Amino acid sequence: MTILDVSVTLSPRTPVWPGVRPCGFGVERRSLPGGGEAVTTRLDLIAHAGTHVDAPLHFCATGRSIDQVALQKLIGPCRVFEHLGTDHIGPADLEGMGFSPVRRALFKTANSARVHRGELGRDYISFLPGALAALIAGGVEVLGIDGLAIGPYGDSSDANHVAFCGAGGLIVEMLDLSAVPPGDYVMLALPLRLEGVEASPARVILVKDGGLAAVFGPQPANERRRS
Picture (tube, rainbow, N blue to C red):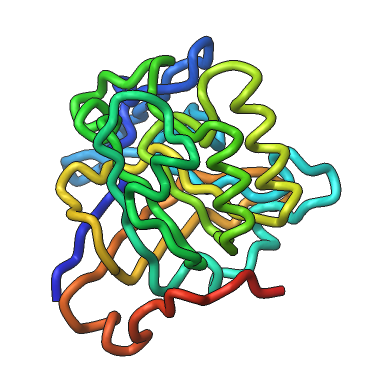
């Protein structure tokens, strides 16, 4: 069984949305009476730091918060598609990648190499509105991307979030897929159980070559959106 950790490392150097304060760690050290010390770290970060899951509440006032999301949606077969272009992903690009209806879809782009180096900026590659509409129509419930958002920086990002969150979808952003070939995997994406919050950092792994994949089985190409 091959386990691929596709989460980015959280640190003050982790790329963040333009204008957002970088992650901060406050370390407190306490000397012990018998020698040595105890270390406690305080985290200063937003819910969208690093690899994270957006719940529908992020852009849908009546949507579920991250603690209300059914974990079975974030655990199961997924398919990784690779976009080799340097422009944003449009409907024709989806066809070129061989996209077919799947419940969980992750997209690898040139972003992955950049996020791996900690260099991702506002020029990240993402989905054009037409492609996002095609993904929703194709039954995608969990959409993952290796960029900062599921839409290009600016108004398109908000519009894509409104559409996908409004459809009840879950979004996984800032994945590091640099070492992941396209194909079928089992995904486990576990956000923190933050009450009433719209998103959470998550540890996301992909499993290949037997193991959990043998338990869940391959993802049917015609699997449609489930209630």
